Image (cartoon, rainbow over all chains, first blue to last red; front, side):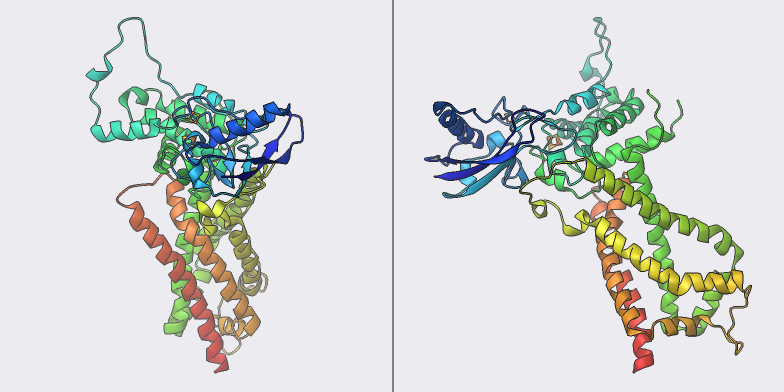
Length: 249
Length: 228
Ligand code: SF4
Ligand code: FES
């Protein structure tokens, strides 16, 4: 199929940036969206132009590196997929496709479609871990009984790959689905309970410091999340936060 | 843990929800009392008088209510501003309707419309009421003829077609606001339960439609009563 692409080009973080139009031809419907961009970039390299910078790594939906706001939707029109898993058969011959970076104050553009998502790393560093003594006397995790339902919910929350689609799609650029998932994956397990109070307070503080917006429960994040992270994780974070803020040290 | 001043985003969200839930409860009793004006005008007079003169309601609950309304408004506008700032460069193409409903995305619009209506509502009822009671010092609740004045005052306000039309439109906005707000408040305070939440959402929808519809009915009832 032949496509018209309207892509956000921006030299560096200081450049103003603009949409630029490109044409690609003979795109196979079996290609992934990123492979289609590879075709475009090869074309650009051959004509001596600067290729379009975009993030990617695993290309199988597990690393969370790929991003892109495609035709007004995070990760494009398909549901439950990352951009690397998005097939070109979701589009038609002759289509015009708008490709923009994830937009949020907390995700500044580095170049073209590449944004800086290290805000997520800093939130994670603020409390997204458990402290374990690794001196050799570590207790076997399997020796700690865990309710099956909780183990399942914790695993569901841990599916979050930190892609940032939730922020990109949220009208408020709120990161609460991501933080909710990260708080939940520990809060649900006995190992995570020990530091639960400090974790939720510190992670929420860091989230605010990074400049993400406030959640208004539109539910857009849950729909766009490639991993189906549920809004119940945000409610759990709110509960954790409420109890942590009234608990005395 | 690093201590910080002020509220966090989650804290503000919980406060927004709590003030909203408080207003939802208030609205329910307001609606119930107003409905008395349709089915039992004498009782409406008596209850209005009680509400208007009981010290506990006047000096304890009324200030709390006024603060609740004010807080919900100011906090809502503050959050909206912060949220807009959180995305300085907008998308060239955006399709929010594919993942969320209109009500959830436009709480600020429906909210401001309701607040504008409240200004009219205060000018219509609350300010005259305060003037009669606290400036003129008339706590009797009676008119010149020695009868309770509440019923006739209400009927008088609803004799004006334009005012009734504004009331009707305002309650449509309130309904839209509640369609998202009711269930959203529970999520915000951390209540999301796979057994109860679906029922709660249905309850929220019923509340958001029935309560504003009753207010509209009451206004129209008094209007047509006087123009029939
Ligand atoms: S919650 Fe979903 S959309 Fe948000 S970062 Fe995690 S995987 Fe991505
Ligand atoms: S490149 Fe790893 S998830 Fe898309």
